[in-house]
Amino acid sequence: MKYHITLLIELKDGILDPQGRAVEGVLQGLQFKAQNVRVGRVLEMEVEAGSEAEAKATAHNIGKALANPVMEVFVVEAVKELA
Image (cartoon, rainbow, N blue to C red):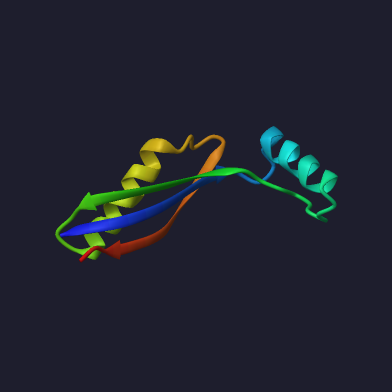
């Protein structure tokens, strides 16, 4: 079966996020009252797996492979079976 996976990788709390600060400055310049903006990465992919549990395990392993464990955390946002 084929599964669609959404994976979110973001900086850990306490890690300086210059891109987030830049975005925050732009938003405030546009009169939005945005604060503490953090920028992360969203990865969307399709994987072959025998079950949803296997797809989740694959997503977790991909997150471990792509996230820098010193500075980043990852979350498997969604695993959805494709028709």
